[in-house]
Image (cartoon, rainbow over the protein chains, first blue to last red):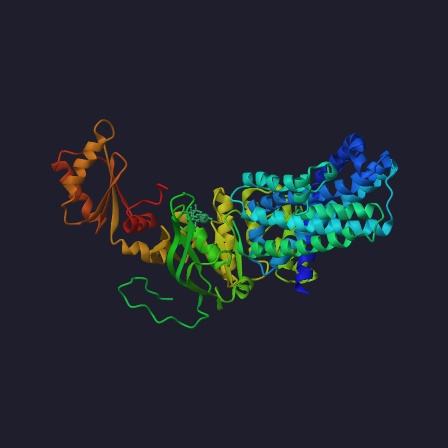
Length: 254
Length: 344
Ligand SMILES: Nc1ncnc2c1ncn2[C@@H]1O[C@H](COP(=O)(O)OP(=O)(O)OP(=O)(O)O)[C@@H](O)[C@H]1O
Ligand SMILES: [Mg+2]
């Protein structure tokens, strides 16, 4: 099938480019490591209202949220790599060939999914010595949720990159979107601490549901409603984001 | 290929579709203007009619901002025209862009290679993007590396290439799938003379292989030396079309350059000289050139020079230099637009 073949083609090239600039992996691992080692200990008292009495319990709540926010932010900022390719004329060169436009998007977004999942695995492994415990099936489902989140947020980011008039506009636009999403998802601080109106607002944030789903999985509550709800919400949003971004890929050029 | 470009002479009936590899009718494109004024637009291209024959190098000559890139990007299916129609290599641009893509190659003004990969890797990917299988893509890559003389650097990252090497790779990428038509946007801009003539040689070689090449340029000598036929574009419209020879012949006669003495009052002297000469019967047209020069378009240069010298002497003005020139494409541009391309 042409779409699968073309996506694979673009994906392979993206992996090659990533392998040739290994800085990303250093940065991508060191940053979350700081969060894991420096931030988490501070949060023990903060997570107490959610039932965390030990460090291990704190990590149990903190790590799934950290993974979610890492993927959301990582995905939302991936538009910068597209800007570079737009400037170098690589997108234009691809668009004069009959290669599938959807593949131009999917191949790139999948590269981002792989990169972010690799980081997620590393963080999970690093958190184990601190007492993190999670069953394999739950973990795999959590990674599926993360993969969808990564796909969705990178598609959104590519779409924004195609729409913004200049390079310098991308950072403020993405930040403006990402900040409220992160704050209202209850990742860094639990929303149990928040006033009622803020909690109500959070329920309209799809990423809040994603974080809830992640936490349920990491606590071993596979049957929790939050699990299927988060998967459903995130999957629907991913389809919408990919659709929107793919249309821009085929119509919009700078 | 006796084709007339003079609009007075009735055009020959358009031959079969295979003869014209590119035909455009009233191609238009405007962009929203950046200024915040209400609904202002920039008319980048305003109605372009062109016919490019199979196997020719067609030049699109025009100053910066004339609309060359915009036209090319429309023809390469990258942007949708606001109006008009075009057929390229037998496929309709608006209704069948997919087929157009398969039959053309396009090399953008700024190229389009990634810094971290090599020429070989780019060539293979490019062929694969055209749907070519893996082993065939490798074979074509090897052929391209040989014929475009890339061997020496084909495995180094593209970031290390010189301007000329990069441009040769760009062109090799544009033709890896064996297109009928190749669009090249300013292929020699910024190149030193040796690299430039090497790129010209590659383009001529492609023509001998049967390819039709559509090249934009703002270099007069490039249009003159490389192109079989050219269209001159200014402010989004064509102002002339024909072989360089035909266009120059339209500027009947010769060009005489008169240099007056430099120094104080030079501008005044050249103004007086212009006034004295303007009434001469052999003069077609007169342009002031700089402070101290005149550019005269005359029927017959050899006959005109003694006469104009007498006239100038009669007015008490001694010319420092007198030069006889054949008209150039710049003279054509000047005659059609009232401006010189060189000043751009
Ligand atoms: N994306 C765009 N948005 C707004 N205006 C544009 C856009 N692209 C081109 N233009 C305008 O359209 C006109 C034609 O531009 P174009 O790039 O086609 O010129 P060109 O002949 O290729 O010039 P050059 O020799 O500098 O490459 C210019 O006035 C340019 O500013
Ligand atoms: Mg241009």
